[in-house]
Length: 99
Image 1 (spheres, one colour):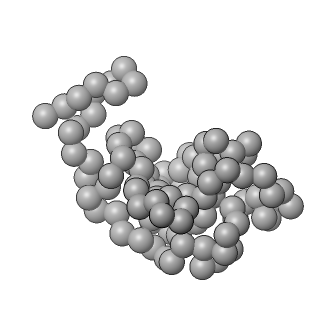
Image 2 (cartoon, one colour):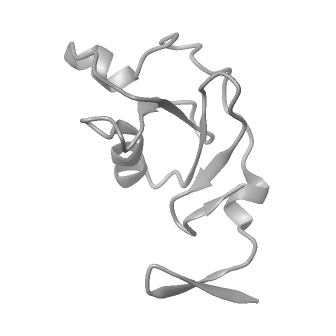
């Protein structure tokens, strides 16, 4: 079954979300920080997201630099998850789905 999302049809289920596994413990490489902001000497971010393919931690789209989305654009790694306390959700950039 298909549904419409952002002017295209996407499957009701997402194979990327179903196959995603945590690549690392959240923040094991840069605890509590966006890796790219830290590398650039910046510290303004709203929330952190972790790539479930390689463990990269980047800032969300509500942050000025949007490093989690930039990581997807650069690598093609489609699924990330929130690493915010109390949040337990994942997002697929390819199918624009939450899991």
